[in-house]
Structures are given as structure tokens and as C-alpha cells.
Image (cartoon, rainbow, N blue to C red):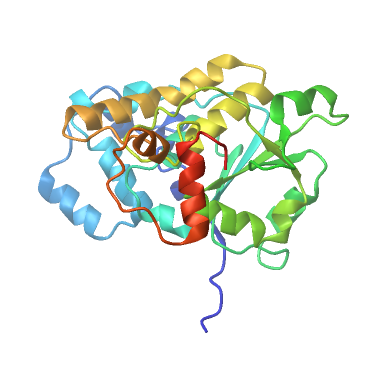
Amino acid sequence: MEPPKEARTLSDPVARPLGAASSQTPNEEERREGGAAPPAAVLGEEADGAGADGLWELLLFSRPQKVCLCPFLPVYPLHVSTHLYIIQHPAEENKVLRTVPLLTACLPQDKCKVKIGRRFSEERDPELSTVCRKSGTLILYPGDEAANLEEFILDSPIYPSTIIIIDGTWSQAKDIFYKNSLFRLPKQVQLKTSISSQYVIRTQPTNRCLSTLECAAVALSILEKNSDIQETLLRPLQALCSFQLQHGAQIRHSKEHLLKNGLYPKPMPKNKRKLRKMELLMNSVKI
């Protein structure tokens, strides 16, 4: 059996691959103004040696002017007092159309940290261990024991200063949450919102499931008591989805929508637990 992989924190250049918002070079300024993309040959050479985050940066800043995302990012990082920790499953690193890079592009580097891994402990990540033990730290994960975030901050004697969000599929997030005892130390909260996900180019389990960026946008707008934060953070996501749909991508309806409308393309699972989940989706019962 292979030993579990070490959890790791993205270094500054990777944690904010779109970090031109806070510290721009002249070339980055040109990209914000719609400057020309680098020649394809140059892009290919750079991409050969780039990791997933480097590739994302190349894809973002090398997009033609008419589909450039830079105009939809804030000129300066949003001023927030809340610290945000994103716990990212390693499988998310290799997905190009993901939302965390857009999120880190909009927030100050010292307020948004991305930690990649499946297993975390005090020995492997003393910083995260310290954060989880603080009374002002929350973790956003739905469940019977989770408090409504909006209601919680009204009665909490200590106003939250930090929130942790897990980035991955629902099964990956569940695995990370339940198999890391550190993440059961902070107060567990959830969002009570009626909004549907605008991340329409990726399939969600239900109509109420939100992407990591959307969860962060709603949570930060509540904690900072500023609805403009949500609008600002969602703007680049809306632009990304719009551009993708204009160039051949298809709207991905949730599994709930497909099941309720008889459009689910796969056979129903034989596993009883999975079948029960499908039935709950069809009956609009939260799982």
C-alpha cells in the first residue's frame, strides 16, 4: 500500500495564477486592455513545461480579446477581512474549467489560500491545524449538524474571521471532510439559499448545488455584510460560461433535472444506496 501523499499549499505564484489584479507587469496590463495573444508556437513551448495552474494562466491571459476574461475581474483585489481557506482535492488541479483560479484572482493573496491534498494532520500542516482550532473558524459543509451561516453569525459571541471550503466533487468533498478529524473542529455551517448554480458548463447533482466559487461568493457576502462581493465574484464565472457556450459548449443540466424530466442518459444503478440517492433526486428530497 502506498503511503498517503503529503498535503501541500500552493505557493504564491500558483495560488493566485490570475494574480495580475494585485501586482501587474506592463505585459499583464496589456492583456487587461485586450493586448494581442502570444504566437501559438510560443504558447505551445510554454505549455509543454507548465503544470495545471500554469496552463490555466496561459489559457486565461492568452485568450483572444473577444473572449478575454480580464475585463470581468476586479481591477484590484476585493477588500475583505475574512480569511478563506480552500481545501482542494488533487483531482481538481487538472481540470481546466474550474472556478478556484477565478476566485483567487479576485481576492488578496493573504486572504485566500489553497491547500491541495486528501489527508491533513497537525504534523503535516501545522498552519491549518492552528486555523482549525481557532474559535473564529468555520467550515462550510452541509449536513444535519450544520448551522445556517446567516443565523449563526447573528448569535455567535465571536464573529467568524476564517472560513474553510472544500473543493471537489461531492464524493471527494465527503471523503475529505469525514476522514480528516481537523475539519470537525471548526463550527460546521451551510448556506440556505434558493439560487441555482450559474456554473452551467459542469454537471451538478441537484439544482441547489453550487460551485466552489459560488459558495465562497455567497459566504463572503454574508460574512462581510456586502452583497456587492457576490456580484463581483460571480462576474468572471458568468463570462467564462457565456464564452464557452458561444463556442460549442453545451448547458449541463443537473442530475436532478435530467431524472425528473426523463432525460438521464445512463441506466439506473443497481447498487441500492446509489439507487436510493437517485430516487431522492427524482422526488426533490435533499440528500
